[in-house]
Image (cartoon, rainbow, N blue to C red; front, top):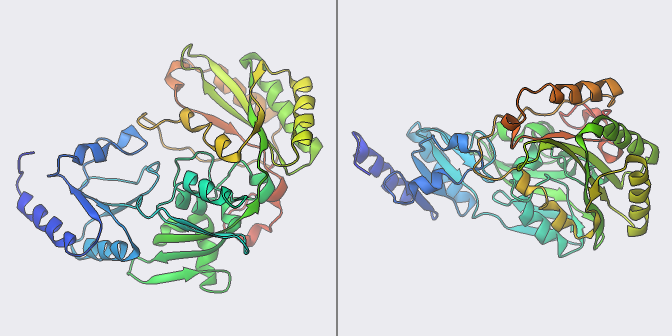
Length: 382
C-alpha cells in the first residue's frame, strides 16, 4: 500500500498503541488488512476503511484502547460476532473481542460467566458439558453479548424466557473509563436499563447468566410446507401452540426463498424441550393437522440444532438493515393474511433471496415476568 498524506502520523498512532496493550494490531499498512475488513457478516461493510483492528486479550487492553481513542478523538467500534451494522466504520478503531471468549460455569449455582468475545456456540458447547443451557440467540455464530443485551429470543425461550430475563449481573467499562458492575442490588437502575439497551451505556466485558437443565437429546428439526398452504399452516401453528399451552413446546415459522428455484418457501422450526415420547406425540398430532410436505424432526443434541439455521444467513451476503420485530397481542387471521398477501404481491421473488421473515410464537416463560422488569414492554404478545 502506498503511503498517503498523513500516513506517518497513522504509523505513529499504531506504535503508541502497541506500547499500551498486550493484544495484536492490524493497520492499513499490514498485508492482512483487507482480509480483516471482509471478516464481518454483512458485505455492505466491506467498503468501510477502519484505521485499526485491535485484538484485545484482557480487560486492561479494552480500557487502554478506550483511553487511546479518547485522547486522539478517534471513533471506536466494538466487534464480536460481526453481525451488527456498527462493527466497523471509516477511520475507526475496531475493538475485536474474539480472543476473550472463555465461558466459566458454576454448576452448583447454575450460572455462567460469559466473557465479551464469546459466541453463542462457545456458550452452548461449554454449558452442555454440565447438562445446562441458557437462552441467547438462534445461530451459533452470533455474539453472546449482543444477544444477551438486546432481548435475545432463543429457541428455548418459551421454556426459559428472553436472554435479558436470564441476566443476573453485567460487568462493563463506561465511556469515562470507569469499571462498573450492575446487578439487581448494585447500580440497579443501570442494570434495569441495560437489559434491552445494554450497548448504549458502555463496553460490556462480561455477562453473568442463569443456566437451566437440558435433556441429553431434544425432539427438534424442521417441517416443510408448500407455499400455497402458507396461511393455513401459520394458523395451525398458532392454534396448536395455544391449545397445548405447554412451554416446553416451540413452533415458529420462517419465510424464505429456495436458492435453486427462486420460489417462496415456508418451514416451521419444531422443538420440544422435554420427554422425547411426548415430543414425538405432539409432532405426530401436528403433522396430521397440518400435512407438511416433508420434515426432518428427530431426537438430537440441542447444540446440533443451534447450528441448523446458520447456513440460512451466511457471511458475505449483502444484507439490508434488520427491520426488528413487530410484537402483536395476537397472531390474528387478518395479520396472517396480510403477511402472506404481501409476499404473494412481490414483483420479484429473486430479489428477496437471502432474506427471511420469522413468525414467532411467544407466551410461556416469555410472559411470566411483570412488564416493568426490564425495558421490553410486550410480554403479553402471543
